[in-house]
Image 1 (cartoon, rainbow, N blue to C red):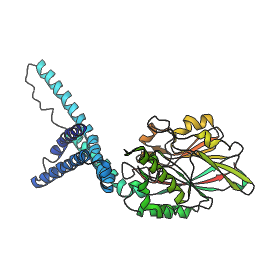
Image 2: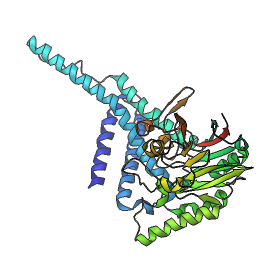
Image 3: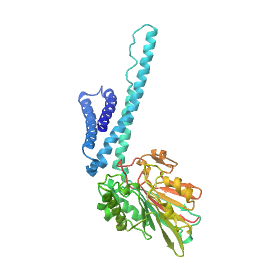
Image 4: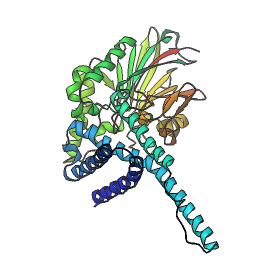
Length: 413
């Protein structure tokens, strides 16, 4: 039934937006007008076809390209037409107000309403089409170009208790690879070349290696295992790494998927921190690196993390660096209960893969869901860095919020 309702909604939006197409193509050559309208309804047929296919064929049976591209494209087309329809609605409201005014005025003079002032305004309908085409163009560009336009961000972290021997330590931070969204290894290979050039001392990976199941990563093991650093690669799990978004045939099947994930990190040479810590030593000094399983403050995300377990035994170390996938963990627990954790490294938000970032200003719908959603945040003596993610999920691209590779240098302040 929900698919029937979905098709009805699509048709209602398309018929409504079609009013602008009719008005703007009215005066052009007949053959061109017919072609434009055929293309328009062809796009509608494509969208409805996607909905029908989704009703008949379960999503996990779709091909990778169909799942990662065709479905999002259908959604983008619908959203863009919905945005444009807002201006048609303004036009219709204006027509209604003018019609009511004509009725009241003509009744007052005992005349019949002429309706001459209630025609559609071409300008608003032009805006309707423009506000559908502009975001559509941005989304298409984001799929073709921006989704793999990796940006290296360099951050200097000043820590007052940092041992002198760790001064200048270079940490490379990546997150949210979402390898199940890749249809080839070329983009990942491009990212690897950038990662290698940074010559970092250590690498942090803060979760969401896959979209749904561990098997997604197997074709890319040869590439992933190239992520190395002299002092090691340390990783943690994100909410997508547990297989929680899959209907498993049995509890045992889900447990097997989790075992594969843990074994995969070991095979890659990554030290997976499951509510535990490791001690890094240089010369005669040491600092602690802690890692917790996914812990989200929102009810819809699991709280597998046990920070108390990871923290135990680190009290004596002057600097503590924490890997925790979900940044909502910072305000909800880390800052309140563990004020001596100096820096938290997170990901998860992707900056919603959509927004605006210019010098001195950044905006994304993500900020209405997360207080810390992209970049560096500080409160008192603690900091959190939210990586914008290397990959994508849902929408197969990026608009304004580019995929990120972060390089930190630690200094004693």
